[in-house]
Image 1 (tube, protein in one colour):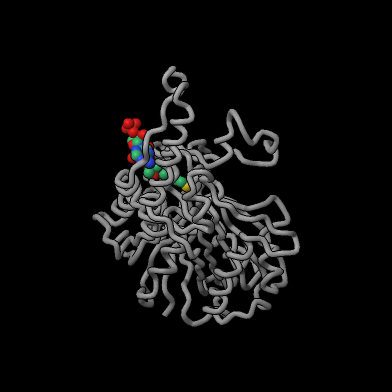
Image 2: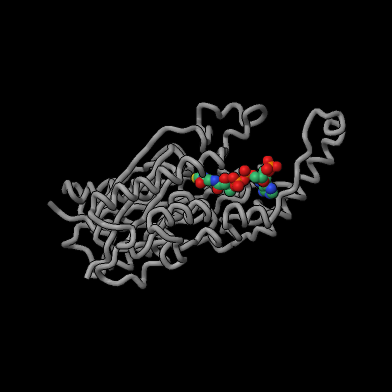
Length: 373
Ligand code: COA
């Protein structure tokens, strides 16, 4: 049976960063205007005034200091409070495919892989920009890849689910080289007028090339073990879809964007993920301390501190569990892959680690890797 490995990764970062200060300033200006426009209703007790957001709260509660976005002007304009991404004609590459291709090219170049020798493309992401044709097929065409491509969405866990799917294709012999991309324009589904969540997400694209060991470059990552898990929950939800296209405004309009019960998510997901990693370690006959590094999903610094602490048996250092959400914020499926891409160069042959993602569904996935000798 062919053995799947990770040959290379890629990362595309948008050029514009928005600091907490800039985001809070625009939110507070929007809230002040909203309160001024609703003075009579507020005074009559019919609606609550919108309270200000705070930089200190955001950093303490989440660890986020800034985020990259594809359109900064719209996001921080109190009169807009959303990214303005011009629609493109069908003849032009769509924006999600374009950023996926940028990350993909980096991973192909790093592996020395000619796109013609890739057999399949998976677009694994939370925020697909359209229903069909699949984003993955557009990426496939833009890169000149033959074979097949399709989209898959398991929210923030999409990348680990994508890696296991790619690895299974390699094992079964249906593909020898699988490109998995995670383009995430999270700013498109974020409600920038919701104080509880306006700071959470950022935009990015990542790529992972999963291949049969016999064609992979010498410097690759063995995949020791993968594990996927899902358990239904409404605590992170987005009801946007073509069945509700007729009612974009009014009652329920905000549920067509990201909404969550952040506290419940925190409480329920931390033990679920820590137990899952422990179960995997037991299956592999390893201790937490055998892991050189944990590349965790980047949603909340305090969540990661708790998960890493449970797995390692001690408070994790930044070296053991690196953070990228301070500069990238939550980038949904791409977060753990950014952490892996930017913090794996120093890992020595034979050293092991785990890529782990978790989020809406609930869903969680682990990919245990070892740097090849
Ligand atoms: N600025 C200032 N205050 C704010 C605020 C903001 N932007 N947002 C919320 N607050 C207030 C709340 O109103 C609340 O006030 P109260 O105590 O008077 O009611 C207080 O701060 C605490 O809010 P809470 O929502 O309970 O904060 P928290 O400590 O749970 O942190 C999250 C919020 C979202 C950062 C945190 O719950 C989290 O990250 N959860 C996990 C999320 C996750 O992983 N989601 C997956 C997404 S894919």
